[in-house]
Image 1 (cartoon, rainbow, N blue to C red):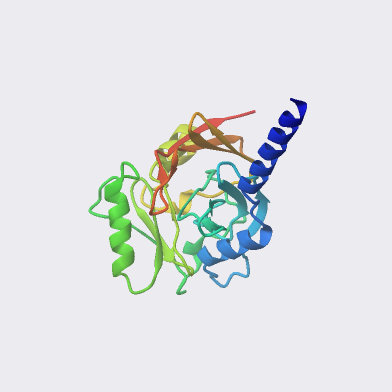
Image 2: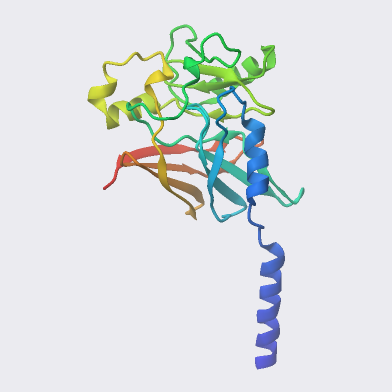
Length: 250
């Protein structure tokens, strides 16, 4: 009896080891992140601050962004078929502050090929990161001569030059988050520019899988608690059933 238990336990350990997802290494993370980075000539590159342990073949990387519209949370998914980690198209950006940080604002690069622009489409509000918004981004990327990053905000799109591969960040709810968190500062700011959305530093990052959902929690240095939840990743690299909530913490 004890012999059978020992053999069963050993078999379970063996199966666990074989099916275990390998950790994302610094080298692989850095290589993937630099593929979405476009050097604006500032001399500042993205820096990997922390790589979380994998959960259900997914991991999150905390990044010091080289400029504002670069994600500070980047997701990687492990492919059993390819036996490697792959960067996810949709990235995350946690934190909003009206205070000026040291993170580069691409709008300040005047007369440069890396200069970014903000523009509106028919003066309409981008209510959500829905199929219509995703289709517009796809059509845009197919028809522009210069590969570009297009990031939707509530009232406008931000655009800048892309790196080797594109990425997207859903910021369609950031105006409401800013008003909710810092009403007095943001009510007087223009709605059609991303210059009001600076990035505070992330102090802590956590990845969990609960009740069939991935949950990413980020705590910022200006006392914001950002929670991103989603059920999976679709074939295009978008997060499925994504929700974003922001509260204050002490």
